[in-house]
Image (cartoon, rainbow, N blue to C red; front, side, top):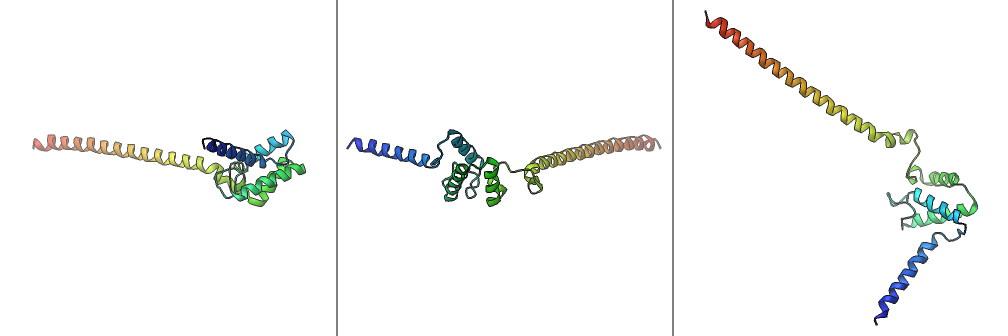
Length: 156
């Protein structure tokens, strides 16, 4: 009875190793395995939003991994593989989409919003300083007028 939990643990551990090896099935060359690993971390799962196809358990990610192995075995270059994935799933499949007219907001939007926010804060601070100066000038002006009225009219 004591050995059953250990046995189950070992069986589960062996199954996990088999599942991990299934992704690299058919890739005998170490350079192909390295390419597979690199590309599978660069490509995003279309279903999982923020997971690459290496980490995702979604069926579409499994299909993409199989497709990746197939294309590597066919001898396709990394550029051809990435172009195929982009043609099929769009720029979303890339973690670093190219800078094009469609992705300008993605690449430069945060910097533009930061600059606009800084500009708004700067303008509000200047307006506040100008309002304070006007209030101080009016106060001094009113005091001078009051003194002149008191000095001039008080003697009449």
